[in-house]
Length: 309
Ligand SMILES: Nc1ncnc2c1ncn2[C@@H]1O[C@H](COP(=O)(O)OP(=O)(O)O)[C@@H](O)[C@H]1O
Ligand SMILES: [Mg+2]
Image (cartoon, rainbow, N blue to C red; front, side, top):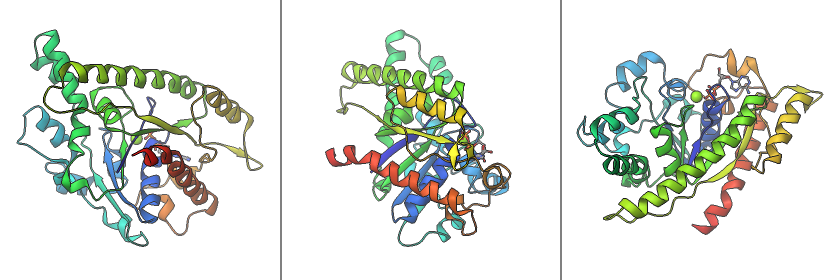
């Protein structure tokens, strides 16, 4: 099972769009895919369920907030497996034996940093508690109910709080959607540095605090940066976008050779109907083709870790 976090500090760069469509295309190719929505904005969840359905069927019982709450002892023990739901319309569009499941998010997914700080007094205790919370998602994914999944894709919130950190620690790879603009390119370098710091700190803490359970060294790789919302002119990215894409390549971060073009009609002005664009029949062929190519590249980027596992 691969665990991949889809991450970027910036909001509105296409994280959720990429997560939904990549997950859908992988499932359409026969994989069993679990999407986890960790963003309190809940966009991934709302791309499969309308807000009424969320309120009636998911809000109180079936969101990842319950699991994070249970970490603090606010709720009885909850496993991730209990929270999995299966969006009907998307699954009805899959060919073959694939599956696309979801753990939904909650508008009130709290920042558990604060709760942690309140509950723990001393420095050493705080460090130990933080270490446990950072590693909790990685451990919880070792759930028998989740063994059938080939792929877990985690849609991260646009911040670096402890919920995001727990996703990074749980991941084998990080996928970074980005827009080709100044702030996005700055952010990628910064993100890269912070991920490295977090991982080093976590591995050092594992030596300090992990007494009972054995901890594997955590080392998520960057699967790559996938550029989204690219404007094309005569089938090529406009010069301004190409410039920023080249800058990111120069950072030494892997960059997908396929970028997702801007399509306001398809993505931005379209009310989600529970079926990701890549699975819809009447969608402009080039956009679907780009999403498919991104999926193929994504799988190729994962191979080295797969071979080693
Ligand atoms: N390729 C695209 N072209 C045009 N609009 C897009 C594209 N990809 C995403 N969008 C739209 O941009 C907005 C932000 O995308 P989203 O995937 O929610 O970003 P994030 O999860 O990073 O906040 C959404 O309204 C989405 O529909
Ligand atoms: Mg999002």
